Length: 408
Ligand SMILES: Nc1ncnc2c1ncn2[C@@H]1O[C@H](COP(=O)(O)OP(=O)(O)OP(=O)(O)O)[C@@H](O)[C@H]1O
Ligand SMILES: [Mg+2]
Image (cartoon, rainbow, N blue to C red; front, top):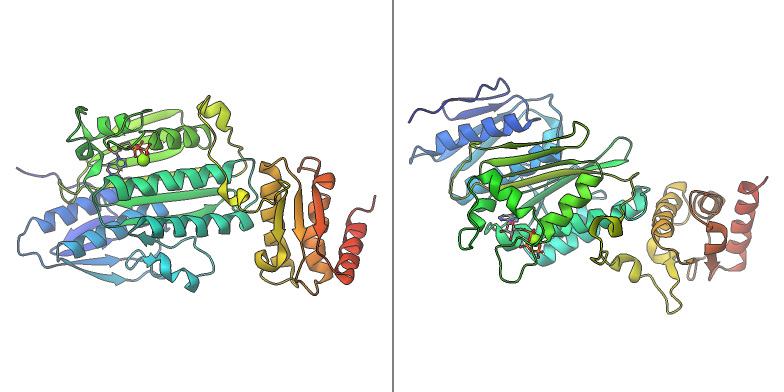
């Protein structure tokens, strides 16, 4: 059978060398898969050389699948020799993804590819990523909770359904931290094959993806089949930017263009292990209305907030544990963003607990307490925000900061 070489000036092959001039669109990934597949058809293939050129933008939805591809090559004993002429590419670790246990090495989890291989690794990773975002990104009601929900569902699907050993995950913040772009990739059996032992008979790979996204559709005895459905509901009502590629098929949602495209017969490296890639965007400035989305289904529980609740149902932020220092504006800002995110989502009181803190700077007090106190986007904040456990000096510094800010 003759195979048509995809017309792509950005990814091309010469001998066993694949040149990657840019990897920014799904057509680039398809071309990359095509060339890898072609080279792997030679049973004596021991090595593929990748030349990564400089100057293209690094996106999660390209880098997570690329990491997954490199991992696949290793698993079939084909060495991926990677020549990197691109500094930003080196920085994102697609050629050698980071495991969650190594997270202490990085202050910020964004813009690098993470690899997870177990449920505990997945939970640690999501918890770390979401905790980081709670301090960094001001978010409307429930949007961070919805993100956490989507990540758990999609990343868990890799471990439960793909039959691959590893999942790859990357995110980056965009538009002045207002938006998050996320990608999760595996090199597993693909969604169509996951239905092989069920009574479902999807006709094509894109048909199988559409099926998996429906409410109550599952291939496993213990699944409810709601993970992809709820995820799709959340994302399509938010930015509407969602792409699922699996087993040579793809579904592209684009709310701004008002359309859903399906695609089939994309090249895959191995028909047995075609993999699944899912990428989406969420906008933190758009609130998520769970009741409106799911009707009678209960909203996800925010265990992160529950862990902070005291016996009187107040949320308590212990400054000694939650703040990395109490001197700088930056550390005050982090805790303020966290406190505001909690106040926006929970109708309760919030206590800033200074027990064990000996001193704070005026700028820290201004950045954390005074700015929160005058934030009129937070409903009834002056009655819901309280300070506790502060020594006399800290109380004075806080009172002074509030007085300066709250001046008429
Ligand atoms: N990464 C993946 N690889 C292969 N198949 C997948 C993958 N993700 C989802 N699927 C298929 O899509 C189906 C639907 O997934 P979904 O998350 O909606 O439900 P579930 O995981 O079966 O159950 P629940 O998430 O409600 O516990 C899965 O049962 C599986 O057959
Ligand atoms: Mg699931």
